[in-house]
Image (cartoon, helix red, strand yellow):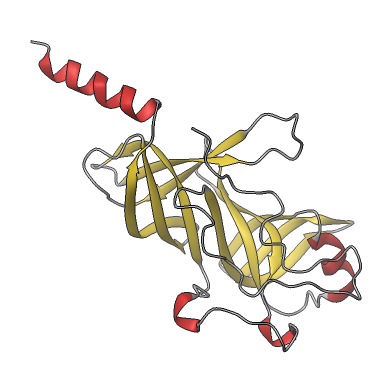
Length: 228
């Protein structure tokens, strides 16, 4: 079963192929286009400080004691280079990642959200439907590991291929929190907050068992429970 995946171009808020013609979205995190659309995207407010001589690599400075490793992606590079004041804080739209060996959090910056600078004639959803809080993340994917004792959840996020000939890729995110007793193989919609560089689950909605791997896992669990 092929489900919608997180597009590499989703949520780029400014079309900077022509910096004089901006085409902003009406919200930083659109509602899913499909009930089981994979994605991992969120908002972080801070100053972007790049490595000397290299604009695309750097850090998001939240405060003196809170620094997040970050990189700039694709179409945001020209915008940052030519139109963004890096001495100011901005609300950045980012893809979250956690390194598998160290659990270290890092962000891939794909846009920024400054509605005061957008076109006045845009029509957006009501404020009550938007999740605009600093540190908010929308995580949607398959739970492939869960430890209730550790309060640890690993979610598999599928990514859309850049070319039709490319294979679908995926990455894993580590979350902190507790969910249902047997979530393996289920597709979840998580509302998550970034707290001290840890993605903490605030709300978890089980959207059902995925075909294939999830069914196999539960069949093995039943066989294991039946064995003497």
